[in-house]
Image (cartoon, rainbow, N blue to C red; front, side, top):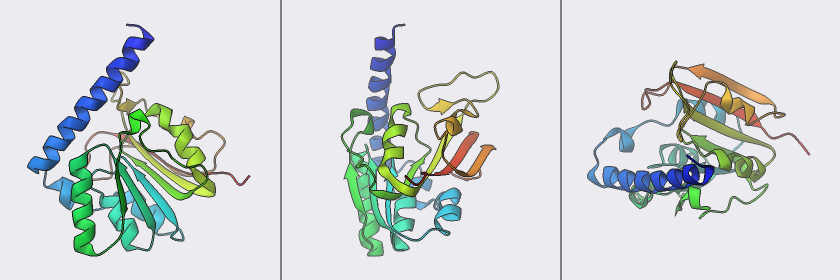
Length: 204
């Protein structure tokens, strides 16, 4: 398979996945999508930060974005699923909190991550290898990135949505690492092994 074919295959698969997620959210197939508590690592990290501007990429129905907004963060949430963003907006209205919720396919660069704008950026359980540089440039000096990815089990090969253990932290080479974990997921909403990284952008 050529590089072009691999890239094309990934884009097609991502488009199919967005359609599948839309169907899942509209059918409310998984109650946990709408009732899950925020990601434990987000809570553990944000509780020690002063609220500022936060962005939640591939936010799903917004469990983390809503939690941050309720605690004083100016929060933007982005996801390719229209159904997920609709559910997020409805929940925000019910809670009477503000979240700037956007429908955008990140694989097609439909949302521009402004450089140096964010105090906190989340990429939780979402892997898009070519997005890391934009996310890192998007946080201000001293800002924090929380990244969590699913990882392969022994004998498995990396995929479009999974890294090998130890690969995630390599994307943050040269950044102070505030937290690093590999192993079983600590989040009840996820069953596969994970790698977690919290990294702070160096001061310029």
